[in-house]
Image (cartoon, rainbow, N blue to C red; front, side, top):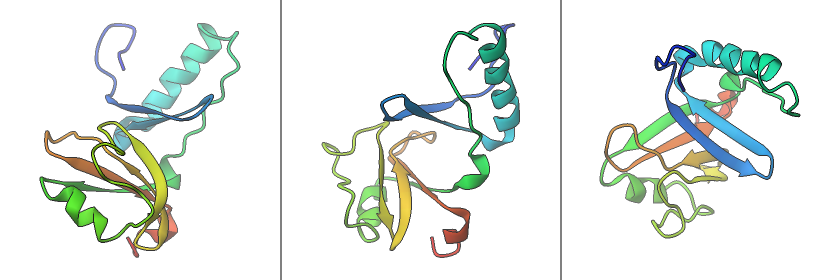
Length: 128
């Protein structure tokens, strides 16, 4: 995401969760700036759009599993999410259970290795 001056504001991933529902996954350190940036564009440049932004940064806790054995490791903790490369491609996201708790798992990589991000509710972080 670039500023009006062309500088990088943040990088991240945009997931299509359902029809007309998208989730941005960004660096949490810049989340407030990104939220303000998007709100400004909605108010001034795209006021004709029926879009609502909701900052869910504090609603999810995140852990990353990276490395060539990441998929094999995760299979020990989830049975309702198919982790095979065919069913769960790069940049995919799935809802299910991880270690018995509701979770959202994303197949992303900021490291260059096979990577997954596991998102859980704050109250489930200790169990994760």
